[in-house]
Image (cartoon, rainbow, N blue to C red):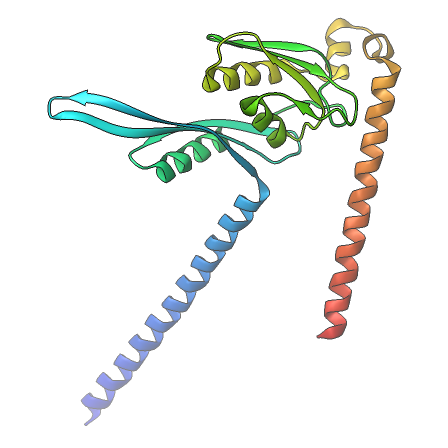
Length: 234
């Protein structure tokens, strides 16, 4: 009788342990899902092009797909990725992960770029020119995707080389990586800031930064009010 009670108690303890482990694993899974959802919502993703490619082997032709994806946070962080898989969704997922591994910062002055720049990569040659507020993104599809993900809303662009979307994107990325803030140029040349950057540029940047700070304060105040209201309701 005592042995049966001991076996019963042991089985109950094992069941409780398994239930506890399942609950813990469920919470971990929920946290991982939430983190993935937050990470996905934090970035802007644009699929630039999808191509079907084939490899000839002894048994015939193997078909697969390639994808070029641009990922950014809309606030100066940008990445470009290339993926290949047998299915389109898998190729896009691989390209997205590759883009997140290749993030870099894009210098901006307000909603445009600091200065004129031309980038070249292989046969892709892209010219980018600053534009006044309200101009918009004057660019083709591949460059437009880059600008949207980087948070650049006013810019003029011209493709001077290949018309291939991959080459255009790589040329535009090469151009964006050449951009510099006025402070970096002034430090490199050993000149005062006002000798390097026009007063209008510096004034525009100061106004944009002040506007961003004001919007951040308003958003923080709204979030605080909502939290207080939720606390009162509870």
